[in-house]
Image 1 (cartoon, one colour):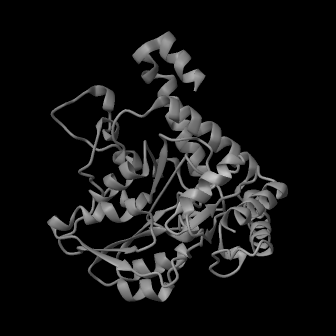
Image 2: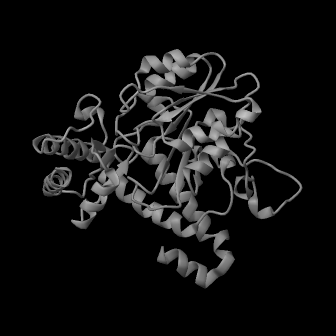
Length: 343
């Protein structure tokens, strides 16, 4: 981040014509390598909301007005299409029977030939349960629909290969498991979809030649960059690349092995403390997110924070999310402190 400020101080706006554009390209390259895509299939955004808005604005809903979403997805995923109901978009919610995951068969029943897109999570934000996105892609494509994957809680925790999974669009961001902080998000858009995608939510960085400043002609950029919007937050780009490079150095396979170890230890510690962890199957079916039902989640979060144990709350539960830098001692402390608080 200091590098971005130094360049701003030394070059001012001229930094856009050299080092800052180079930095954007390096960030796209790094994310592409992480998820197994081409650099031309990656676009950069300040948030998932911005990326999702651009993608959703590129669909033709006249013949395919239906969008399928799980009722345990992160709210942003559904809000995008709920806001389009006035334009004839139908949002079909697939129900989770246990608030942990959604059976694949439920998606299968919801997807039909009027479906434009299945938009759902790779890892559910509250429960940490992992979805089989390759199976979802087969279901969606079998009806001619797109699959849009919210991977905010998966990339950085487990290996993601967009080609092997055959997803059409995938988004994630730097705030969570990619160690880059807020203000940077990534969109993968499958190469075959670029030419047919003309987003209506657009900005000057989505133009073929943004520095031509041609106000009278909109020419979409080649590749996924056509989805990009306004001026990127350069400091967030530098922070995003630092985090992304570190995650790539650790490797997704090693991170996943560590997450399984830590999640397994957390489950055992919670059970040992008499606390029921929310599990959808075994530890291998989860990323590093486990919930525990408690009577007063905000009070529990505040009490643990007093002991310098940082957890989060969701409706009716406390959410614990260890990562590679945590230790087994951290796990035991968190379980014991949570038990003390709710007794």
